[in-house]
Each structure stands twice: as structure tokens, then as C-alpha cells.
Image (cartoon, rainbow, N blue to C red):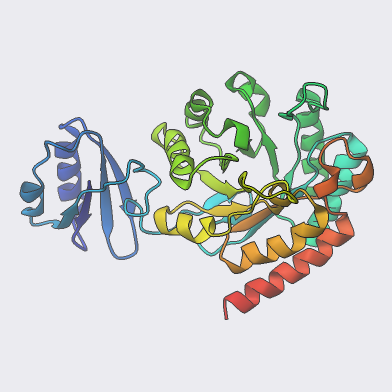
Length: 334
């Protein structure tokens, strides 16, 4: 249920209304916009007297929300959420570039790539320390040592770091990580999501390879309902009948998620296609359809990468792509 307050309502009256609503075992989510304040009621609202609330002199309107996701619903929070990571901003008109190798392999590799992507215009550095792989015999990442190397790259470049967490038991290792990524395979690891909801850290939540948009938003709801509103949604391709690409990039998800939710939406064209030469056109298309950022894999020696070299751009290719991305952004905002 949503309660929209009239403009210029006094703080005391608003607090009295909120206290009364909370006395009915409801959680109250407050969204203060430039022109109005929205109170989102979370809990069993079936017994709430809408007519009584609507009759109050400080209330402009009351309406029920049929969607099962509440905290991430744009009806609860009409204005875009902007997630801040260091000097970077994601959402609300701010565009963020995240780049780096699929896996952290060595200090020389991660620092070299970090310097290259920063020079090209990247805002954040990505790199996998823990790698969920289909085969147990594939490279699984450097784990704690990988995080240590990411921190060295951050010291060398100033770029905030993004890396994937696979288990809540590993949270102590991620204490000094700037953005925690939840990969597609863990999108519905609800115990992990609830733990991440208590961290307060920005969470990059990837859509599962066979999950609906509603299921993605419900996973975001787990994080937000646990107290963490710093969630970034990521479209990274879904499993379809495509026989030439790794996945199918669902670009229609971007405007639809923006319509349904106030959370920022970024796109991962690397995992969506699995082929380096397909990354630039899909990155440009994602930019044109209004995403809030891109996460792209970049490796200084893709042919010898320990993970996903086939979908990784070389630093010079990434730099050229960033220039084209900026041109598309300028054209789209004209």
C-alpha cells in the first residue's frame, strides 16, 4: 500500500502518522521526492482502512500495490535511486563503466589491466577472485589472494573494486571490497541475499540465466528488505534457443526494469554473447536503450586467459569502444 502525503506536511504530523501505521505491525518505507513524500507500507495491509487514511488532512492519496516486490518498486520510490561507489555514481542519469578481467590471475595482470581501463575511462575495476565454474576441473580463482591483488590494483589506480561473492561464510574476506557481485548462479541464493542485506555495501545483482524479471526483482527485494538499499540490477543474458551465442541479451529488460523499479540497471554484454567481437555492438545497443552502465571484460592477453578469454576485449579495443559509447550517449540525450 502507498500513502502519498500532501506537499509541505510538517515533520510532527508525518511522524505521528508513521507511528500509528507502525503500531499496526507495518514497516514504513519513506521516499522523499522533490515535490511529494511517499510512504510505502510493507506487511499485512489487508486490514488497513484505506478510507480512514485517505480522510486525513495530510494525505493526498492512498492506493494498494498489487506487485509482490515492494522496496524496489518504483511506486514506492518514484525517483531513481543513485548508488554511490567512491567518486562513481550509478543511476539517476549517471552512467558507470565497469571493466576488468574475468579472473584475477596475477599482480602484474590485474594492475596492468586496471591501469589500462582507467586510462580508457572506466569508473570501477572488476575481477573475479572466486569463480563459479561449470566444471570442477576448471580454474576456480585465487580466492583470498585474488582479493588481495584487487586491493593492490585499487591502490595503484584509485579504482573501486567489484568482485563476486559466492558464500556468506566468505563475507569477512570482502570487508574492504567496494561492490559485492552476486552472480547469475546465486541470484536465488536467498540466505546469501539476506546476509548481504545487512552489509550496507553496494550489491551488483545479476539476473539468472533462466529467471524472469519478476524473479530478479524479488531477489533484489530480499536484499532491500534486510536493510540494504544499495542494489544495482544487471542484465547479463538469458538461456534461449540461440546456437551461436553464449546467451541471448534481453535488452528489453532495461526499459522494463526502469519502468518497474527505481534501481539502476547495468548490462553485461560479455557474458551475454561470449564472443569478443559481439561485445561492442551489444554494448552500444545497451547504451542506446538507456542502461545506467556497462560491465565489460578486458584482458591484456585474452588468448592465454585462465577464464573466458574468448569474450574479453583487449585494452586498446576497450578504449576504442568507450569512445563510441560516449558518442551514443551524447546522441541519445540530444
